[in-house]
Image 1: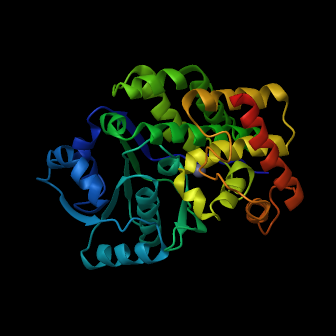
Image 2: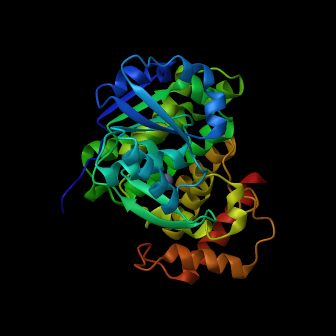
Length: 349
Ligand SMILES: [Zn+2]
């Protein structure tokens, strides 16, 4: 079995980096389509205004809010009509996934500027497409990673804390998915997944506290890198197995929209550990970590207060998927969800 390591062309992380976007774009082309949300454009105004545009032309286009097939097509047409040579996505996971998908279809370079450290979207070679109703539609597997990832830690610290904490949920999933598939991974990718988990345990709580104070300490800087780079490069799953498969099940319920990707993944990781019958200490460490940083450990924490057996079965059925990549039947998955919820309540006392 071959081993693969997928890495971004270049990764830059530092305070105030967004202002340097212009000098990076010029390495790939003279005109860029810049995708940003309406709120993002407002929030990042001062940094965006400082971008040097003497040698590059920036064509800003507002993002519709969902990474859908329709949105990718709409933006692709703009790139063609306006002869843009580079695609730039500035924002959260959905904008970044949209940017990656457009660049892939048009075979053009792409620069991603994540403004939250909430998912491994910047560094993972997939784009997740949703339906216009916000439900999971398909995974677009990309042959390569973005040309450049530019992380401005000053902007990330300004984002809601809940987003950076959600990113830690992604790191948890990456580590346990990696651990289960260790033999099929490059040593490099596994080392990254493992280092990401180590950073969570050592720095996660310190980082959360610093974020509450609105400051970027060394712990925050490390967690941003774990959430963004280490989790992305250590990510080996095809997103239809492991914690991500269970996560996909949760997205079937409207209630699940109250929580972020990484939050659902944190609980999905616990479900998966129960499904695999992981040792008690291992489950305990994850649940305690989640409680300390503020990640969900029960269905109720996920915003699913009045969940029925029927709904849990629906989640399990969707998580099982067509290829049964979880290696478990609906009944076993239902049991793991219920048990994980019980474990979470037990630890909460
Ligand atoms: Zn993910």
